[in-house]
Image (cartoon, rainbow, N blue to C red; front, side, top):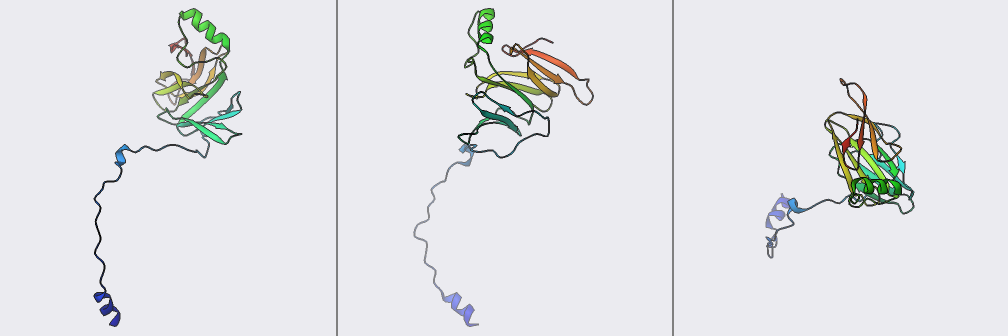
Length: 187
């Protein structure tokens, strides 16, 4: 056929120069999280909080989002290794810092400031980890390990203690209490 004959006679230009330059090393590249769409409410209800600055704090999988509603900007706490099962938030009163300093004769944990929005988030699984962190700076102040599932978590009235409802499929449900500033289990 004429069409086939025409294709066979068409001359293709030779490539000018083949570049053998290497592209970026894919093992050295990192991804940056810009925006998270969604909400994880399957584990527990009541896990959306509002900071004194008006930011919404809520879990999405193993990420906790801090959303500035006015600016439509998000920050992310990404140190969990499993989905966040429950969380709580409070504002640290000046008195907590003063008591901590007077009782320990030392400085409070690095970065801990009065009137910051403090968040405690617990991840699902065994072992489970509770992270206590600042919603403003995203700095973690404490990491507590529990060998049983955590269902609910709350700061006690003194804001120094952390209460958790723990238990599981075959384990009885009980309450665990920690002094989160130094990670000491109290009950």
